[in-house]
Length: 230
Image (cartoon, rainbow, N blue to C red; front, side):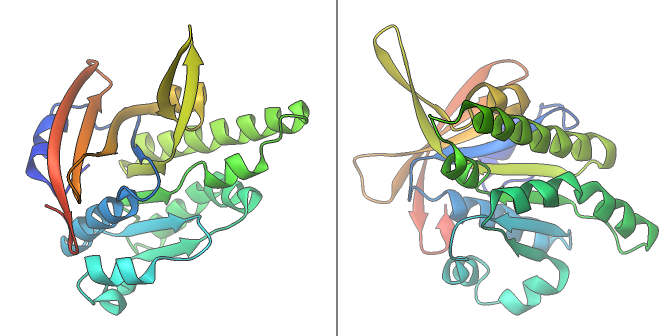
């Protein structure tokens, strides 16, 4: 996967590109969508096709326009933005995504080089209900199946997969830890991750990069500007 910041590319350079998927996670408003759009832009500028699936209520057209420097119409010619606000619809779309990929290959349109899901667990969390264990079991199964399908697409067609995710908190032995939403299911399928954290300095962000294949982490400080992270 290609990132807009050189140090991130250098850190993940030795990663086996055929294994697992990459997650971008953090608290609300830290800039996850901005960075994911910067990644999409990098692919688009290299004439690579991007499928961007957005699951929050309102498509962030202003952020998209700003990151892509007011060239949204040109971007949409080669790339597809999907707005999905229902978990079952999202599951159905991802479950059947391989048929779309195969169709693109057959018609020689050129399949997607990058798929971004922003956010992966928002709709999943809205459906969870502590009083309905049976329903939660089905939701976990569907989340697991979506991730499995995405990993399969990556391995079969060499499509880069980026999932944007939220923070969840886990208490163990009296201590509370920040983990990715989706818990063990997410941990199983995610190979590499980037966590964005606020600092005491306005617009300054700390990136915590984790490379799963060798369990190595790296800290990176960056600034969030109107154009994105620099």
